[in-house]
Length: 618
Image (cartoon, rainbow, N blue to C red; front, side):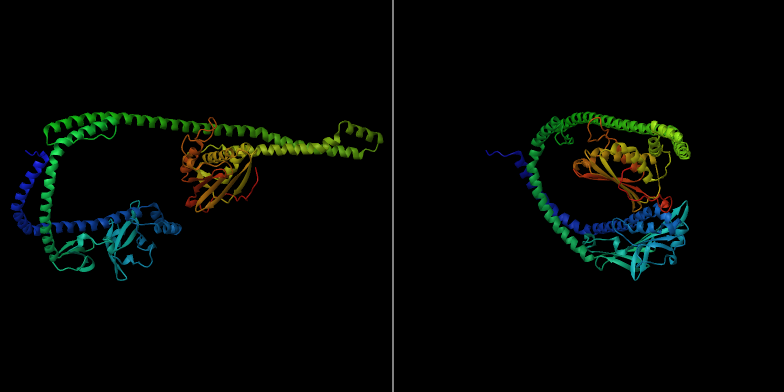
């Protein structure tokens, strides 16, 4: 007796059953499909028409939303309030406006409907003659969508009001080509046997698809007396019915073949494969990889119960492991955040205490230095008077004995040398006092305590004060080149900016091991103050460039750096709405460039004095 497998027996039984059933039902199905297809096709067409209409409305709605967001930007309101002073900004701003990556003609109207600026002067209409503008300016309409005709071409006109403090200050409009509502570059299968027209006052503005003959359906739109007219090709529907019947016959043949094949695999799938699934899931669980969830609703009752229990066990193990991993990640993140916060707070407290202490010391030193300079000035006058008195006594002495005595006294006490040397000594002392006074003034400037609010600060003055404070660290092995441009004063925190300059100067000095040069340059570029600090030191490796602003990262030896200097400097520049860039070549040097924006209202005021280019040390 020939033995066969369960899979083969199931496949043969299913094949014979399906073949008999297919022959009996095919006739009934085909006849029913032919009669009901027309009804179903009408439903599909109606649903497709509704979908297309909804897509068209969504197209306009999305762009209306984008236009509304553009209208509420601050520069729009500023231009409407002060058009003369902001016309340059609005030109630059509107030149970059786009909707979903496409640029359209846009116009900004004031509260009377006059055009303040338009991005396309070839497609402009007189908005004051339109009927909808008064409704937007009076606040009666929240927005407008309609069709406007320019030079014989039709455009979608989108408009939104711009309000400020409950008052309509102007209107922002956009013109979209009418065909943009359906910008398909390739043929759309939905247009096969279907034509779509956009009508205004029963006049066709544009048609999508071929011109067809058949029954039409017109759908009104909720704005500007527009409507959609759909035309369905009856011949195309008949062809689709024939195609559907043919496809149905082929589908039945394929279904019988597939059913037979599935029946053959049934025995393997529902008897052998479940065992393999459990074995594989157990192996993944043992390895700690992705957990496999078995299908619990299984036909075989025993396998279904086994899968439920296995999934329950796997879920419990997964939950415990996930909870443990989350707890570990949260703990690690909390510890890292605490370290960063603690270090930044300590550094901030140190800098604040150092600034207060330095300012106090400078103030205390300033008083005795003042009267020392005053006394030296008086002493210099006294010395000149004594020298003049000695010269007059010598000149007016007539007695030879007296002259001889005076000469002996002068020789004994070396008066000629004293009188010749006392003036240079006093002048040298006064020069030293002047240098001390300059250092004290720079210390006051550098250690100035910042106020809670920003104040106008002179960038050149801050850099010069910082150079004076850092010069002792640089003068032995660095040659300093300074080039200060004419800069306006900008609002900021002078103490924090001086801290940034100090960090960059100290880092530049430490990067130079033997002898080198440091270049400092300031200038104005594109409404930004630019500060460049460049050195000829060892440079930074390319793989470390992206890490230098990270907290606690340092390439210095242990005990020589905290890794917070550049991180704090980066945060300070961001606090001033600026940015800091670095360019470095190993073995050649590093250049840090700081960009600080100049506020628009300060463009012509509060300019710092001009500094001539220099290449000297302090």
